[in-house]
Length: 555
Image 1 (cartoon, helix red, strand yellow):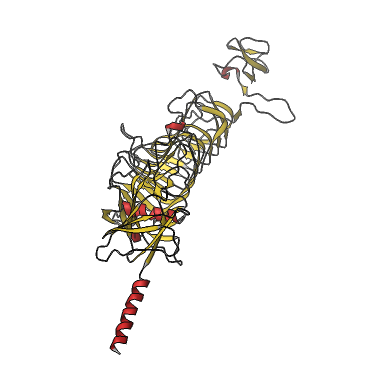
Image 2 (cartoon, helix red, strand yellow):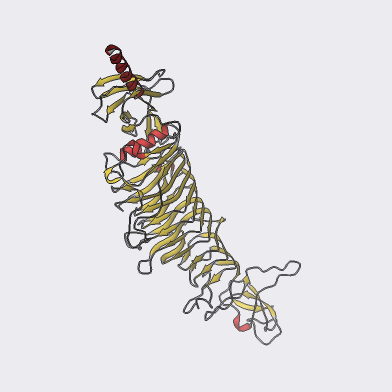
C-alpha cells in the first residue's frame, strides 16, 4: 500500500511539473528606427533564422529547465546552467520552447542598424485575454524610480510578434531612457498604448496638485520617448500622459523616415508635457525630406509647456487633423519659440475646435506657423496671449506660396497678429478678429464674408483699436462691418461687384473722397463730379472716373 501511495505521489508530482510548463513562442524581431538607410528599411525587421538566440534565466530561485516544443522546427541547446541557445525554424522563422518561469530574457546580435537586441519574453497568453497585455507582466514596475525601458520595449516586441494588440499601463509612473544606447521606444504597427487618463500632471483640478495616475516619463535629454519609422501603420496612443524630465532636445513621439510611408497614427486624450517638441515628424535628408507620414489624427489632446513647439513637422507630404485639443504655451524667450504648431511643409491641415494660448504676463509664441503647405482649414478655434495667431512663410522663403490651395479660417476668433509673407489665397468666413490683426502684403488674395473686426463694439467697445482690416492685402471681395461703437468701420465692398442681368456697378465716391495712390486704370463712379474734367472737379451730376497718368480723370 505504501509503495502504491509513493508511486501515486511521484506521478502527481510529475503531472504538476508537466502542467507547469509555459510555452514561449516568437520571432527574431528587431524593433528599431534607422537614420542612415539608403534603401527602404522598415522599423520592424527580422533577423535570419540562422541567428543564435541566447535565453537567460531571470529567476535564479527556480532551475533553468527548458525543452523544445513538440512539432517545432526550432532548435534548443543548453549552453550553461543558466542559459540556452536557440535558433528559429528555417521554414517559418518561428522559435518555440517551454519553461517553468513566467519570463525569460531573449538576446541576439540584431542587424547593422540595431546591435545587441534584448527582450524579456512572456509565455503565450490565455486565449480569453489574447490581444490585451499588461506592461507589468513584462517586468515594468511603474514606481517612479525603476527604469522600465526594457520591459516596455519587450512588450512592444511581443505584441509585434502577434501582429498587434493593446498594451495597458495601469496606475504608475513608468521611467524610460536610462539604459545603454537608448534611442527611443520603437513602435510596431497595429499597437495601442492605453493608459487610464489623459489629464496633465499638476492640473488645477483641486487644492492639491497631483500627478496624472498613468504617465510615461522620459528621464534623459537628447532623446525621444517613442519613435515611429518606415512601414508602420495603425499606431495609437490613448488616455495617458507623456512627460519629460528634461527640455533639452526631448520629444514625446519622433517620427521619421526616407522611403516607405508610415500611415494612420492616432492620438486620443493624450498629454504631451514639458518636452522640447511634443510630436516631431520629419523626412531624412537622403531623400530630401520626401518621406510620407500620412493620416495623423489628434483628438482631445493637451500640449503643455513644450518649449519649441507642441507639434513640429518638416515633411514634404503629409496630412494632419488636430481637433478638440488644447495648447498651453510657455512664454516665448530668446531660447524658446513656444509655438503651438509649426509646419515647415505639409500637404493638408485641419485644425478644428482647438485653442492655444499663453498667459497675460507670459506671452506664448505662434499658434499656427506654416512655411508652405497645401490646403489649410482652421475652424471653430481661437488663441489668446500669443505673439502671433498665425504666420505664413516666417522665413521669407522666395519659393513659398501658392494660389491654388486656399488657407481658410471659419467661425474662429483671433486677437493676435495674422501674418502672410508669400502668395496665398485666404478665405475668411464668419470670423472675429482684432482690428489690427492682419499683416499681409499685396500678394495675398482675400475673400472675406461675414467677418467681424474689433469684435462687437456694443459688447467690448473696441475702444482705442485700430481697424486696418486686411492691411495691404489684395481684397478680392469683402463683406465687412459698419461702424462699431467708437471705431470707424468700412462699408461692404467688392473688388468686382457683379449684379446678374445688369451692367457692372462700380464703387461710388464724392470728388473729395476719391482714393489717392491708386494704379492707372482704376475706376470708380464720382457722384458729384463734372464730366470731361482732368483732374476730376466737383459741381456736376456725376461721372465715371479713371486714374490716368497718376490722377483721377472724369470721363
